[in-house]
Length: 102
Image 1 (cartoon, helix red, strand yellow):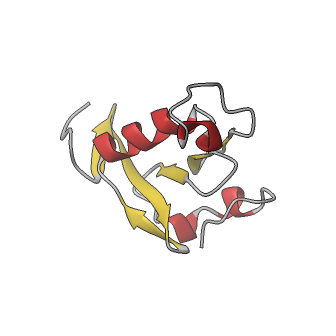
Image 2: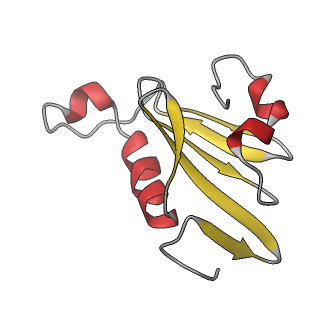
Image 3: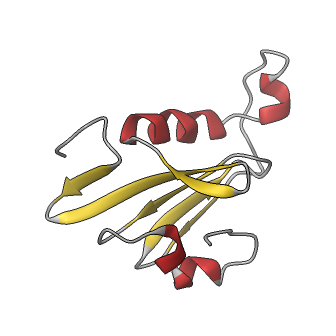
């Protein structure tokens, strides 16, 4: 992986772009911001408010040829796009119920 800590990372010749869903839209995120949010999504967001760590059973992940989406099942979600795509260019992800890409 090259360019750690950036919004766009090249892995084996493929340009990956990182986004987090904030205030109703996709915002570019660095790979490190994305990774931190992804790790936090593994824990139940309600339990975290009480400093309790337990698995998040509402968490989902979807993968298409255009990108990879995750959600904590509540308010947090992230998207990695492949081949330098913007979230709006990921029609395959847009077809998955509950995934907001545009």
